[in-house]
Figure 1 (tube, helix red, strand yellow):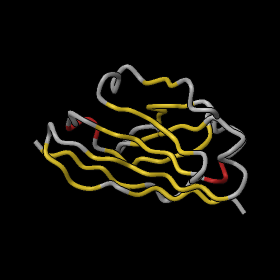
Figure 2 (cartoon, helix red, strand yellow):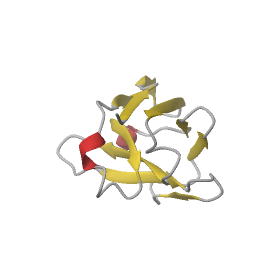
Figure 3 (cartoon, one colour):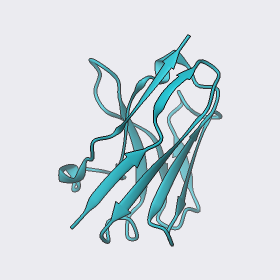
Figure 4 (cartoon, helix red, strand yellow):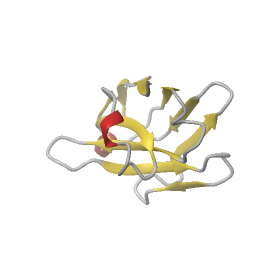
Length: 118
């Protein structure tokens, strides 16, 4: 059974940092590129960072490039998102899933809320 559980969100002041974690069960993690997505109120869910299966390559949305760092630990079936220099516009619910998520749309978890205050 596939399960994706996000954690680490919270309330932080602008300029602060948070580190998100995504714990995955099942084979979904070990055989796929993974990504961090976010959805702000009234907006569509967007991919903000992705990482290849081996962890050797990463990609970032322009809006987070230079501030966020994605990583994964395949031995622990866990993925991370280090978020620095947070801005109010980073406020959203953050989710993890495969990249792309077209075939894994049924596995979205509850997400973790990130709120950045000014």
